[in-house]
Image 1: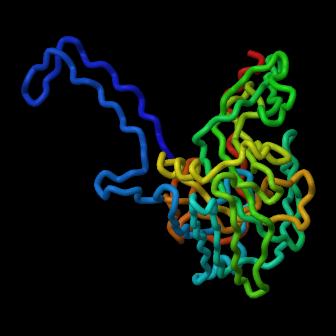
Image 2: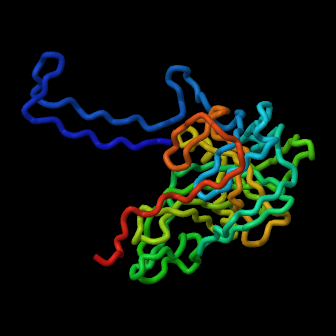
Image 3: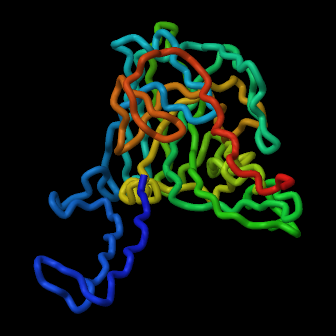
Length: 332
């Protein structure tokens, strides 16, 4: 993920020592080069060429985020278990193909959460019985903002700009929050032996989800500005309009700018209830990022992103983000 550098501090007007010489004025500040994804050493786009190309994404388990169920069933924990996704894209054919092979894909598994994690903004299923899988193509990774509105009196979250068709509510505060854009495939499943193969085709210029809609925006956002450092998940509901569907040029730009992209599988009810259409059930199986992939045998901390060797392999639930340190609305 790209990190913005702080501005360079001005040097003293009295001059500085540089290589034993006193300079009357400081050197000009450096301007970071805008990311392009193009290697001046190799004279090519190393990770993904424009318009036409392909790349593979090794998929691993353990890629769930805060509050999500991390699915690691026995067949996924075998030493020889593996999964790989391949993306092939062609602007001239207006086609993006997602193919995947699995050895260790649970068949019609069931899972029940101990508590309901639904929020005032999104409903989630508590229990999945004999579920199937769904692919999520996360093509834009926190490299754009969505405007969220908060009640100016209570400071409670009212909703995203895309869930407020009447426009900004009166007496509200707009806040821009970094966002991910995902689109999805139809449900699929493997064999009872844990083998699986899937193939899905999107349009290059308009990557619609399985409902024929523009996918979903996802953010971690504070539900109250009283506690601005306490985050929870927020999905746009019902599917974005087709006019907001991402195209693969945006996916390539996310890769070139250093944000990358992700493919992930989620365990879903079949059929999906209407409240869950165009967004995922946060029970996550195999997943992989590109170009920064996580080595097999390692897991990432969902709170700070650090890597460590895996010591266990078992289905579990990640805790929520830590509670707020500040409460701006607390009585002194």
